[in-house]
Length: 340
Ligand SMILES: [Zn+2]
Image (tube, rainbow, N blue to C red; front, side, top):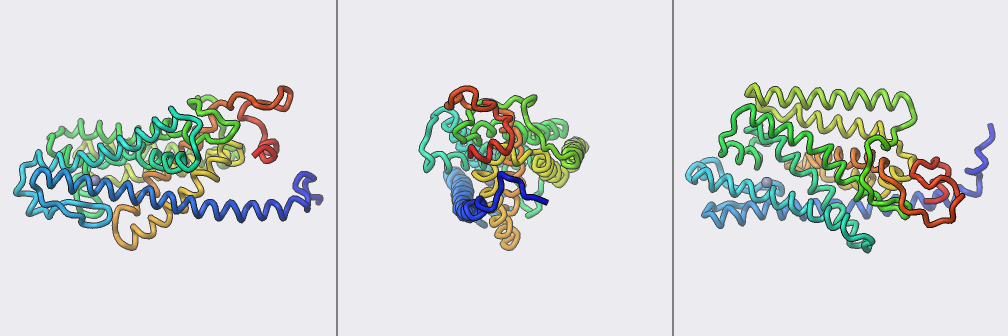
């Protein structure tokens, strides 16, 4: 059994060193993820406090991921004040994410020191609206308090079908946000920030992964529709929606061809560091019982989907002379490993 000639012995020390450097880089990038997510979440909670106080409600930070007043105190204030205090913060979070995303797509090239945190703001902020809308139909969250959008929906007195429609929009927003994020993840010298075409998206070559990924995608859709139907019927559990979001991430992880040059770079630059940072926050959120535990699903799943969609974008204008192999992103992994 001979080793493949391209991966000969002389290539090993260099690749080991590259891997060690890659791991250190991923850990540092994971810290960037934690910092950006921590700052955005704190800003979000402080927006709740500031808006509430402007309206005369003595809100305070209740935990790293919640702000407000006790239910007894809340009951003494007009519902519109509570709805405004709950609604402004998610709007600001979403606007920040979309603004970062627009900057990323509009201003290229951009210094890496600016682009990386900006991309993380977009990765966290763009799908955020989906997370809020998904819980709008549920009066009580796992932690016992009402979600921002649920307070607003309660004030607006939405009918059950309207509640279900809002939840459906929230669920659909996750793949839509992944499509929006896909061009922002394409940072390689041969990758243009072009819109991905779904027909061009590459899938994992292994058959079992395609089958398992397809099953996970179908199960995600099933849980999503079941969740929407239960909200329409008056049930308020956000669990089916959470399962739908988690399964969509599992499906994307299985279906993405991680050796494809675009997916490989997305993994090393965004997904790997993202999972390190989100994993650390998951542990913190679980131990300290706060909402940081949910970001691994709410940010991780759309990030994985965005990596899959990013393979459907076109290559940048060729810089090398023609006849140097295929110019599209579809070149084989062996070509890519030499290029990257
Ligand atoms: Zn909030």
